[in-house]
Image (cartoon, rainbow, N blue to C red):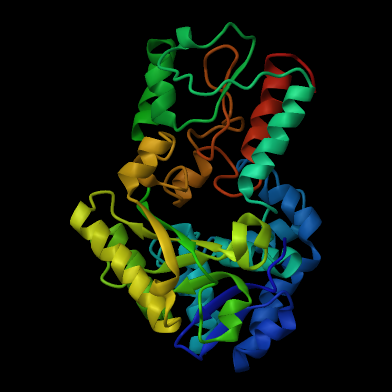
Length: 397
C-alpha cells in the first residue's frame, strides 16, 4: 500500500510541510532552498540502483560507484553542518531535521545526514510503502516460503546456550552482540568477547499503539494524506530534544514519529475502525512516572492538531524501553537501531572486519542490525550473513 504523501510535518493546525513523491513539489515549499534541495537529492534518485548496491553492502569495501563517494561526502556531515551549509529557510531545515532525527543521535554528530539523504531519496522513489494487512503478513509470507523449501519454524524456544540449539553446520544469530556472548561464552576468543562487551546501545523508545473508532481528525487535510507524521516543532526544537535524550534527560516536548496505516489500508481494521502508532526517543533510565507523562504529552500534541482525537481512542498500549526488551530481548533497553550509529560503530558493527558477520567460532554468524548495513527494512544483514555462511562454511560462492 502506498500513502498519498510519505511524510507530513505540521508546524501548526494549518501550517504543514510535506515530503512529496515529487522532488519538484517538495522543493517548491523551500523557497530559495528549493534548488539546493533538488541538487542534493536528484542525483541520488537517478543513480539509486547503483548507489543502493554500495549502501546496502558491508561498510568496509572498495566503492563500486562514483555516486556512493558523492553520497559519502554529505553523509559524513552532522546534519546541523549540512543544514547550515545548504539551507537558510526554516521550512527546509525543519522538515529535514525531522528526517535526520530518525538516526537517534544528536543532530550535531557525524552521519546524522545519512537518513536525510537515504529516506528522502526513498520517499521520492517509493513513497514509503506499507505492507497490506500489516508487516506481520510479510513475515508470514517469508515463513510460508521457508516451509515450502523444507524448513521448520520453531517458536517459544528460548536459547540460553549452544546446547539449546540442534546440531547444525551453520548457525545465524539475529541477536545483539552481548547476547551472543551470553550464549557462546568461553567458545569465543577473548578479544571478540571484549569487543562485544564494549559495543554500545543508543537511546530507548517509548511506543504507543492506539485502536481508534475513526481516523485521526487532523485539522489539516495534508496530515490526513500522509502515511507518516512528524510532531516536534522547528529545527531548533528537534535538535534540542534529541540532544537532551542523548544526555539522559526526558524531553518536555518529545519529537514524535507517528504512523497511520489504516487510512490507506482499511482492511487492517474491522468495522471501519482504525489504528495508529507513534514513538519517541527516551533515555533508558526513564521512570514509570515519566513514561505516563510522555504518553499523555504525545496525545496532547496530537489533540492540538486534531481536536477530538482523544474521543476516538478505544484502547491504548504504552510500551516503555523495558517493555520492548521484555517482548524482544534483541531490543536492548528499547534500542531500535541495534546499537549506537556513530562513525566507529557504523564501521565496526559489531567488530572492525571486512566480514563482520563471521563470528570466530566455526559455523557461527551474526545477522542482526548490529551488523552492516545496520537498521532498516532491507533484510540485507541476513543476506550478507547467509552469503558469508555459504562461502566460509559451505564453500559455495
